[in-house]
Length: 119
Length: 151
Image (tube, rainbow over all chains, first blue to last red; front, side):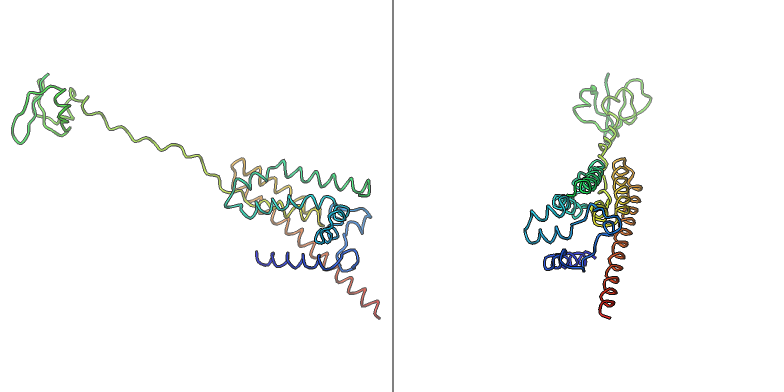
């Protein structure tokens, strides 16, 4: 199971490195965007990841500002996940209710702002 | 007050209490003193009770601070990813359960924390499943378009 996730991750990185999502129809489009014409909080993530893998941070920020900034946070959370049993105190520390809802608030705010100001 | 000790059929003494204390007389030694009808165990003679303090009960072990089990997996990362990358409603449900896991955990209710963790897992996986189905439908749709264009 764990191995499978790593294989998928490596495969995904390879695909997003090799192909530019904005030039190909084969990358899934956001259903929310197609249905409503509004961007969802994750819109642009695939292009942003492609840009990041090519070390083009400016483009990545333009495609999805939030994604770039949430990557370090995701890294911390994944690390906490990996050491959950060995370091329970650390896991508990990064899973405060306040942090969880702060993440939610930031995502919603980003969702609103990007549609209001076309970020 | 004088005390006599019966040792190997011989009477020894008189001793004072202080001498008995220094000789570390055993509570099982047979002793006689004025007022006693017969030889008695030193431990049973009230006048000698000061020599044999009742065994101090063992100190109860200090209350161990209760060791918390590790917090159950909250599925927070997965919920956030599901929320952001496609299936917002399922991600939010996952997030709600993630926060419930946390609350129950700090309240010391580990059973409920585990249960919420299972719920968070369920809804997050539903979100992932829906995402995969949408992706599959999209690919099928594309293939269909490609075929139609060829014909």
